[in-house]
Length: 144
Length: 144
Image 1: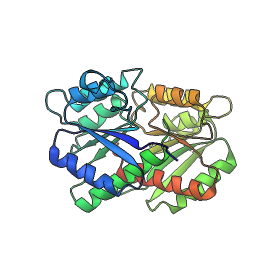
Image 2 (image 1 turned 90 degrees about the vertical axis):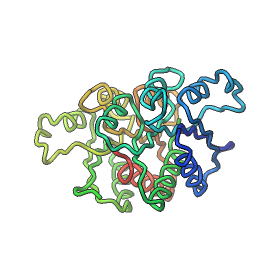
Image 3 (image 1 turned 90 degrees about the horizontal axis):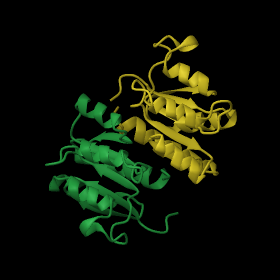
Image 4 (image 1 turned 180 degrees about the horizontal axis):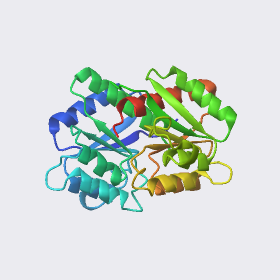
C-alpha cells in the first residue's frame, strides 16, 4: 500500500482534454494527485526541478507521465526523447495519450522508448474506461 | 476490435509459475493465445523466426512479451537487452514479471527500456487480479 498519493504528470496543451482526463481519473480508486503542465518547457522544468518548479516538496518525481504528442512550440516526441535520454529520468514510465493513430507517430514513439501508446477514444464512456484501466495498471501494479 | 487473437509470448522457465500465469489469463475477456518459451534461446529464436520457429504463421509477432528475469543459462536482462537493442523488435512491449523486488534488478530493467516491471504477488487472488488488469491494459488499449 502507498503511504503517499501517487503522482501523475499530465503534459497536455488542450484544456478540454486535460479536464476530461482529470475528471475521468476521479473514478480511479487509488489515492493520487495530478500535476498538469500545458507546455513542454514547463514539463521538463518540473521533471528537472528547475526554475519555478525547484522545490521538490511541491514537485515530487512522478510515478507516471501522460504525454500528448501535439504540443505547441516543442512537441511531445521531443519531450519523450529528453526523458528517455536522461539517466536521471529514463526510468519514469511515459504513456503517450494522443488522438493520433498515425503509424509514423507510433513508430517514432516506440523508437524513443515510450512505455506505452494509447489513442484517446471518441466516446466518453470508453474514455473513462480506458482511464480507469490505465490508472489501475500503472498506479496499482507497476513498480519503479 | 481485433480480427485475430492477441498473441502473448511468455518467457518463464518455472513450469508452476507458467501454469499459474496461463490459468490466470483464462479470466481475461480478450481473445488471446499464449506461446510459452522456457529458455532465452527459444524466446529469441521465436522472436527472430529462426530454426524451429521459422514459420511466421505458427510464430506470429507477439502483442505483448511477459519476461521472467531468473532464467537459466541466459538471463532475462540479456533477453530484454537483445529485444530493445534490435530495430526489428524494440517496439514490442516487454513487461517484466518476476519475484524480484531487488532495486538493482528494477534499475537495470528500466535502464534497458523495459516497458513495465511487475512483481508477482504471493496470494493467488491478488495474482489473478494483477493478470486480469495486465491483460486488459495491454491487450485492450495499448497500440503498437
